[in-house]
Length: 312
Image 1 (spheres, one colour):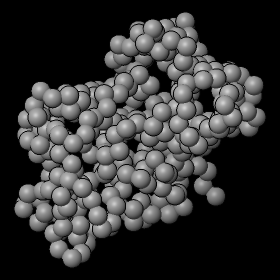
Image 2 (image 1 turned 180 degrees about the vertical axis):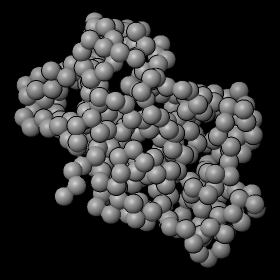
Image 3 (image 1 turned 45 degrees about the horizontal axis):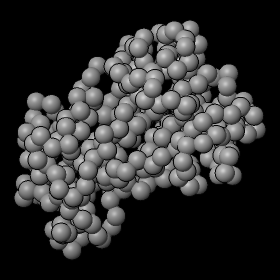
Image 4 (image 1 turned 120 degrees about the vertical axis):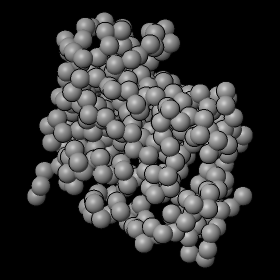
């Protein structure tokens, strides 16, 4: 089913909207489209592939009801839930989910798996998102809006995502869940300004888990300790968990797989883990204590590291 409202405005989303919501969108149609809003805020920063493919396509689209046509992926948030983490070591045996900053050097080998998330939900226009609840107190209303069956797997995943966004996080963590591209851009500018670079891990082809070798040219990017990371969450439209944590740095790392595949990876290193849950998977894997050493991890392909750049 396609949602066309007149010759000029097309809303390619996961469902058709109420007359009130359509009227609201038409009334605000003079506002900049998401990609133009991006350019107005970041004139020298290209939209990374990890965000560009989530922009609604022009001229066509499909109405997808969250309860019937696809299943949301119940992904672990082990790499950014520093407060509440219940993952166990044996769940990820022989995979280097976390490593020490001193390991970021040419020749170091580690077992890795770079997998693209299956949930490719588009961004919705900001004015539409603002008209839809996003609160654990209104889950029933939200499920009804998106035709998601209560008690279904999709309903549980959506509920968990909302609760994660409402969680207070850890001390010295500035967090925000962006439910539109425009709100994501606004959060980044509020924390880093407009002179930024948006970085994502790029994989030539999806491969099975195997040994990768770090190549020469590991490079620290951006201004020291000026990093915001945004992780895509599982929801019926694009939602990103963005947070800025003190004493965090980012690196670009070239990796070569045992099968010859190449990865341009982004690694984030946390130099202060004193506020993390002592039972966090990272401490189990590395056999270290909170706050003792810097801990790093590579980003998923649908995660963006934002770094502040020098003003020229």
